[in-house]
Length: 127
Image (cartoon, rainbow, N blue to C red):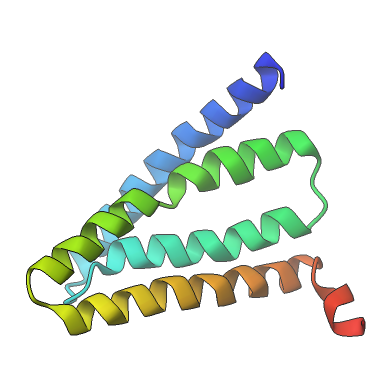
């Protein structure tokens, strides 16, 4: 690991966090749902995009910048956990289960689709 690697992750993270803020604010202002849909959309989109990023054959520096930095800050596991706990503690258990099922199940599916689109999973289908 070099200083350049740290800088790439840091700059990517800065842009990812700013992007997450703007996307979340836009969704919250436009739409009202009973589950934390802004975090859900950001995390699902991030799963899909990360699948593409890791499978299109980028060099290590671009993966550090886009994958580790940008997508690491764009997606938000800590907010997901906090909102899940808040749903559970506020006796909205059904919403808690739906939110987590869509987040984790959808995230895995979208990451896989991103990899297929990026070309990284075609060998999976041809085996």
